[in-house]
Amino acid sequence: MGQAEPATESSWQTPPTPGWPALRGLMPANVRIGSAVDGKLLATDEQYRSELAAQFNAVTAENAMKWVNLEPSPGVYDWSESDQVVKFAQANGQAVYGHTLLWHSSVPAWVSESWPRERIRELLRQHITTVVSRYRGKIWAWDVVNEVLAEDGSLRDSLWLRKLGPGYIADAFRWAHEADPDARLFINDYGTEGRGRKANGLLRLVRELRMAGVPVHGVGFQSHLRWDRAPEDATGNLRRFAALGVSVAITELDVRIQLPVDAEKLLDQALLYQHMLKACLAVSTCESVTLWGFTDTSSWISSHYPGFGAACVFDSDIRPKPAHEALVQELTSRRGTPPG
Ligand code: G3I
Image (cartoon, rainbow, N blue to C red; front, top):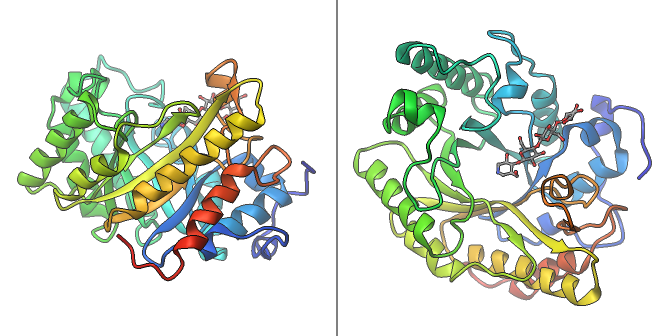
């Protein structure tokens, strides 16, 4: 990809790329199509910006809004990259999905487990309040808590659970709601997109939180998938969450392929992308499908899964792959069909 000069505000209003259809123009009105945003490419690569603007009507900062990046030293916030994402979105008519206020990972190294419980609780309250307040009215939805479950569906052993006990989840939602009462508040996890122990645990947790009056509005299903394995009954699984009265969303969809890539694997990948889109569109309260990056250039997969790659719907030259075509076909065939 060509490296352009850093963006100026006037260059952010980018025209749609000619040559292939834009997903955002094909989505039903009540469902958003989003992508995670790589802050470095956003700042330096015109082709990346242009396709991001053309294809998607929602964006999620892939890393910029994580605590470790926002508050590198105590009380000193660096909003530069997260502000860029929000400005880009505003200039291009995109909603912003905020990721994430609380996670066991990406906690700044200066936060110490040796601190007393009340100090840690107050620190967390302040962090959530500061971040949500800064973007009040500008963020459509927040991942309030990310990956709080263990594989067996119990609560994950984390700094937050050890120091604060299970009530930290309800507290996080209440603090976020106080700071921006209009933001949609999500609980987000991986490995829960199909039926299974972890999804059962998530269902129990969301039910309990809702019964306790905690402002949980939605459940995010990350959907980091392999090309050769579909989740177990994704549609039925989303539906049982929707039956609790919450929205659902596919929040981090990608489909990694074991290298080398071949035409058959790309077709399987395309079918899996299409399958997850269908699952969302089959549920009337599914609010969005977000891809975890749209180009193979910037995907996290190669650094985290050796031997795997090519997980996105555009290749590393930002040319559409069969997966993009499958999404376009699915959406085109549904135009005029009422949602699910
Ligand atoms: O930007 C720095 C760079 O300056 C430095 O030289 C380099 C050295 O390691 O690190 C770079 O930062 C990396 C960053 O990605 C940007 O590439 C971090 O080390 C690396 O940890 C970080 O990984 C991210 C990961 O979350 C951990 O925060 C991935 O990009 C991101 O895709 C991934 O996203 C997560 C979601 O937040 C939650 N769900 C799972 C998903 C995939 O793991």
